[in-house]
Length: 608
Image (cartoon, rainbow, N blue to C red):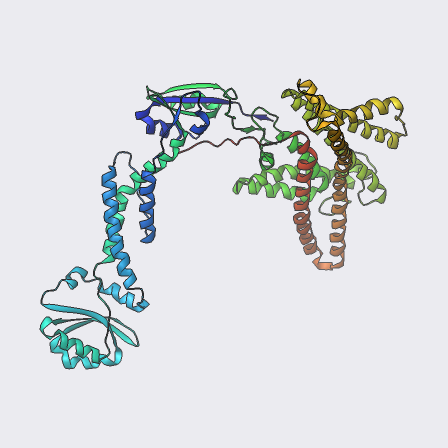
């Protein structure tokens, strides 16, 4: 129903206190900060804070190494531990060197089988450095065919061996021999079809652990600094001060200012939103319980500009009304209410909250149509006993009701179109666009022309009253059409601009004549679009007749058919009716009085 009032805030503080100001300002989740580039201009002497990507580069290097090591670094900034750039560079260089060694060794092991790698894992239970640094002995590792194991006992005095693992084909073992007899022993193992596997030069698992430890020490600090510098784009420099400019809802200003109570060097100024040229305030919609869920449809089309008309309440009423008419069924409407409530409460879906409102209107029109899950006469005793009526208010399936139903749909559509035009006239007058309010097709001229045609036709067809005569045609038809035809020159005249169109009168008249024909045609087609409202009432009743017929034909299984039929009708028709109603809102109504294009309120936040 309205748009939240905003205030424009300017925070000014010393350059030395930039980080503290940033963290405080953006921790509130209230301030919609403006980019410094939008604030600084040639006339105010401001400067942009120089971009510093040092910590972003450090962060990329850390995350690149961590990703390559398949490691997740979990280290938060404690708020006090800091590192110099030299210390960060030294740590990173050290880690990258270790990673190169790890990567080189892993590349060398790329041809190994899965069983080879599992045996290597068992080998690492020994100290890899000790295995590689023996002075008088030689250590070898590899796989030996199972059939060769029994032959090792012949040479057992020349070496010692340990079997690490084996399967049905191979045994993976490590053997140690003196350097003096190394060649002989190696030859013997070759003769037994021993396949050597290089012992790793380094223990990469230990190096990975060391890398993770070193990265963890600096990661939290580097990420914190990189995150803070992302928000430097909101800081403008004015001599010795840094300035942050942004918008905040009026009711949160006082609380926001208290956050800077201990920072004596920070000055906060606030002004009414909309005064700063070049800075458009963001839009925050504020609606009551009924209309609030429908804000999602407004946002899909485009938010209104700050200070303009909020169409949410009008959309909520008209959307619910049109949907309820087309989906009028007391039972199905109740299911929609319950389903929507559950989705809204447990899944936090705004569409669920919308469904609750739509279900209420569907139930109301279901009572009017006398329809409950396809039973068309179930409510008839209610009308007879309570309202003393002889039958339902309207018998949808009766052929005599078809034409009144369709005419009522067209009448409702005409009323909504006229209401939309009237809203546009008021909006344009508020914005002081007098020419648009008076002479456009969606202004006073269009309202008079369309309204006179609608009411003239209604009086003629409904009551036989003929209102068409030279005076009424001249005043209510010709004059509005001429105003629409010459709307551009008339607007220029009001705005004290050149009346002659820039393309000349000939070109203007040719183009405007076609546009005027299109305007008259669009009024007809827009009105006829509302025929779908009556059409869906008839189609809903027809679909439920089919369901009830199938129920009677299936005998004992009729109850199941009834349930499945209602589910099918609700799913198909509910979706189609929802889309068609939204189409009527956007194309037949929004297009007449609402432009959208407003800026969304997005608080600038940073985690401390």
